[in-house]
Length: 271
Figure (cartoon, rainbow, N blue to C red):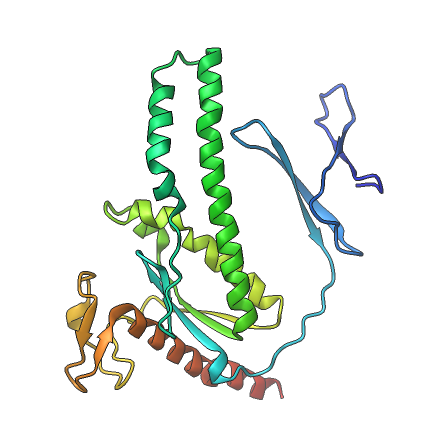
């Protein structure tokens, strides 16, 4: 990549050209002192090309030290609201695909009735592709903004280590899970926290965040496998719980214990 934003890529050995020069329209400059490690060229369904540069550069990250209890957040995955946190707040994901689903069905129905490969078919294919692209861009924008807000506000965030692939194969939950992009959200949140020297923790799959009472710690096994129960009363302390909020509190409590068992113990060993 030269100073004129022209990227020079080598071609295959059997090609008549030794390299190809591509004029880039970059959305932001490369970090100072960065080195390009690899380049990926992709084409979307609209026929537009995108060049992704993987660069390496030195970055100073100052550790925040031991997070305070007030800046620890637990996030419980929710099919309806995307997540419910330990403070009882719901993310309220806009469900972009669900909003666009009716229009997509209409446009795809028109496409299916046209002769494949014809000019009318190609024009209609682009209409459908643009709708899908709009949904994907809306989702990605919302996920980045939500992850950015949380990373700036909290020092340690705990989420469930869910098997999203398994959820995506279920009959009733698959479409909604694939629409909200919770897996990408976890990736965005992780690197945004780590860039600020903060912590991202996944509670293990064996941690029953939904079944444990956040007040007394007693496990209610009657909730196992039954997602229809949204509110329940602890048989030990008689505390009434909202299922998702209680799980968020348990994840937050797991983060507090993680500081003592992992973060503090490792700092003692290093010292």
